[in-house]
Amino acid sequence: MQSLISIGIGAIFGALLRWKLGESYNHVFPTLPIGTLIANLLGSFLMGMLIFLTTDHSFLSQEVRLGIITGFLGSLTTFSTFSGEALMLFSRQEYLWLFALVGLHVGGSLIMVCMGYLILKFIHQSIGV
Image (cartoon, rainbow, N blue to C red; front, top):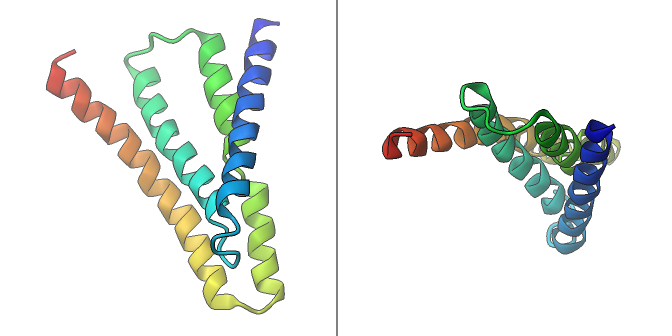
């Protein structure tokens, strides 16, 4: 039961942050909604950090990990919104923007997850913990 509560609480905050990012930034460049991109890149960066923290240095309880990873990051990152935005570009035959969108989300997310992991690894090694 604690796991369900933890996931639910995390999901509320992740969804609210995703909504706020969309509200704040998607209008800036409607062809390539920046709020959705920020949500996915930020979520990937944080996922990389959490992978480092939970791989060999697990000091977070199972409930906290589930709340952050499954709840918060699961609702913050948004493959369905990204897919819908890609479909809209495809249906308008804006293929160059479609490839830019896919490249930024997929490539950017892979880069950010690695950066999150490597930054925490570097900090960990630098302070000798």
